[in-house]
Image (cartoon, rainbow, N blue to C red):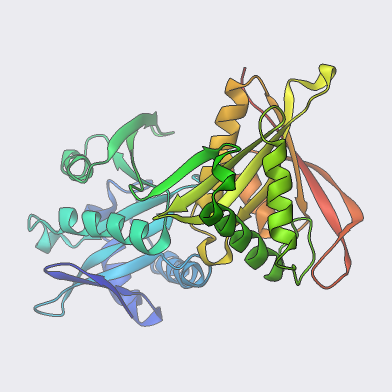
Amino acid sequence: MILFQTTRLLVRSIDDADLDDLHRLFGNPDVTRRMGDGQPLERTRCAEWIAVTRRNYRTKGFGLSLVTDRSTGQTVGACGIVYAPDRNQPEILYAFFPEVRNRGYGGETAAALLDYGFRHFHLPRILATIRTDHSASRKIAERCGMTLDTIETDEDGSQTAVYSLANPGLAVRRLDNSEMLDDTRLSGLCRVLIDTVNGGASVGFLPPLAHDTAPDYWNAVRRSLGSEVVLWIAEQNGEILGTVQLHRCPKENGRHRAEIAKMIVHPEHRNRGIASALLGHAERFARNDGRTTLVLDTEAGSDAEFLYRKNGWQRVGEIPEYALNARGERIATAYYYKLLPE
C-alpha cells in the first residue's frame, strides 16, 4: 500500500516479500555503522522487524516502510516513523543504499515523514536521533526545523544528538473556567467523553453514556476548576482530541501531592503520543506547583498501564473487583505513583 509520495520517491508499506531488500539494506555494515549499535542485522532480525512493523501498522498506523524511485520502481532504501525500545516518543528513521547516496533523498524523505506524522497521525512531537559525527543527517534535521534537545553518551562511548520538532498544528493547553463556557469547546469535550465511554473505556462511566450526562459532568468540572482541579486539552484545528486533569490535594498534610485523573484520548486518535503529551504537561505543572508526589489509578491490564509505565510511573499493586467494565463485570484497578524531582 502506498503511504505517501514525494517529488521523486514513493513510500509504501512493507510485508514479508520485502525481506530480501530489507536484509540487503540493513545487513550492509556501510549502512548500519551510524545506526543503533552500529552492527549489521542478520536475516532473522530483519524478519522479526517486519513482523513488528506489521503489528505496528495495526496498532499505531505507522512503522517501517520501503522507499522506491518513482521513475524506475527501484527500491532505494527504507524509512518510517518508529518507536525505539528505550524511548516513549516517535522518531523518524531513514536509510538508503550506498549507490544512491548524494541525491538529496535523505532531506526529501525526512521532511515528508514529519509532515506525514503530523498531518495523518496528529503526533504532538517527533524525534530524530543521530550520531554526533553524522554531520549530513544533522544538517537535514536542522533544515527540517528540528532543534537539538540534548546530546547523550552511549554505553560504547559514542554520542547521539537528539533532535525534536513539535507539531505546529497540535496544541496542548490549560483551560480556565470561562473557556469551558464556550459551546463549541463544551461540545468537543462531550464528544471525547461519549465516544470514549461508548467505546468501552473504563473512565468512571458505563455505556451507553446519555448525551445529557456528558455536559452535566463537564459543567461540574468547570465549577471545580481553580484551587483544586486543573484541566488540559489537546486540540488541532479547533478539534479536541484528548484531555487530562490534575486534582490537587487540599489537605494541609497533603499539599505536596496530586492525582492524575480522567486521562481521555478520543478513540480515533490513540497510539499517537497525545496521551504522553497531555501527561507531560500535567507533570510539569505539578512540579512547578510543588506537587511532587503524583498518584493515579487505571483499569488493570489495560493499554493505559503501558502508557504510564513507559512514562516512568511505578505500579504499586491492584485491588480486585474494584470497578465495573463496559459489560458490567467487576474488574481490578491498578494503582501507580510517580515522585517528581523537587
